[in-house]
Image (cartoon, rainbow, N blue to C red; front, side, top):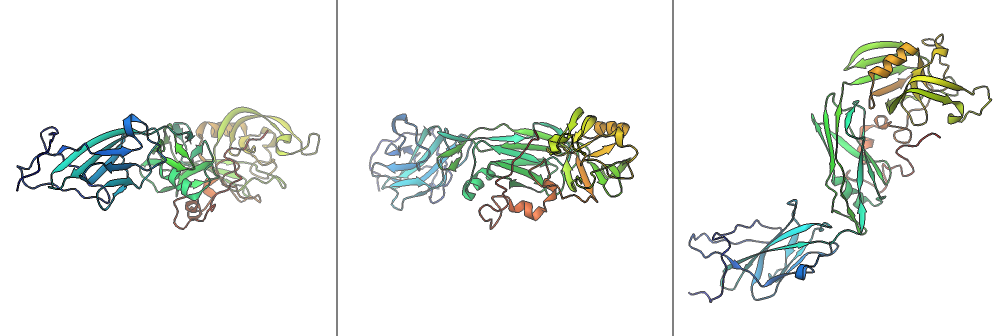
Length: 414
């Protein structure tokens, strides 16, 4: 039987092998003498004709404009990501079922077949238009070395409300730790996420944080924008554990005690918060005034003090610092307004031996437990299973579960 004559163009002199797409089939001849595929000119992309940029909000459509039928379509962006799609039963077209990215370049490889079984191929490139609404993410903290208690943060430029949109965003946020640990994102509110492992980070770990959000359709006409990655490393595992009832702080490095320090903590009415806190920053000198924590000037509890070697653990003003005025009470009684006070010598040693992200834990206080998100990094006070339920990807997640919509990442004291 002879083939119906038609013009064919040989592509590179070899048979092109095209991968299968979902919903399609590809046929190839086992005969090594089979003719090379011809240039399939009777196909077109709908919505991207004559070099026009396609609307990423619309599906990608490939249409057969002649008698040939389409047997396979493979569409990828410049990063090699595939676009899911399905063939029409009669081979007259193909339609994407997955979303296109905004501001991206795509390559579409189309396979066809004529009535005599001859194979055609065509490769078409096109661009999608830019997004009009961009969602960007800023990771924290900045690249550097931190203690093993430092959570990773992601702050979005625009609130993301729906569970579906949150899941899209969360899938693009990546945290890679060496050595590897089990961890999860938790939505603090509709703009802020925190990431932490089940336990603290390993000592001397490397943590790479990046996003693949750029160009991804989030929903509501919004697409992801570019982001800057960060790389964190951890130092030794440093833990300062204060027994408020026993009036002593024990400092551990990698599980070994390196110093025992007599301290004073919050007196009745100003009890120091229990639980795990994380070092937020350090100031060699700070002026502390009672008005910043709501104590009226001139009252019996009012104070205005120059303070040295101050290590901050909450945004509301709780520090570990030098308190030479209370040395006689340190190791014996709690007389502060909530801070952990110690001698100037011990405070200088503490200041020099901890870094941002190190762990400061208080036990035995009559105060409340440190909250997870609204006064620093109290993330470790939330049980792991509850933490995981704050992920948009958690199985059976209810809308809004695990998110404190009124919480803020870093409330400041005036």
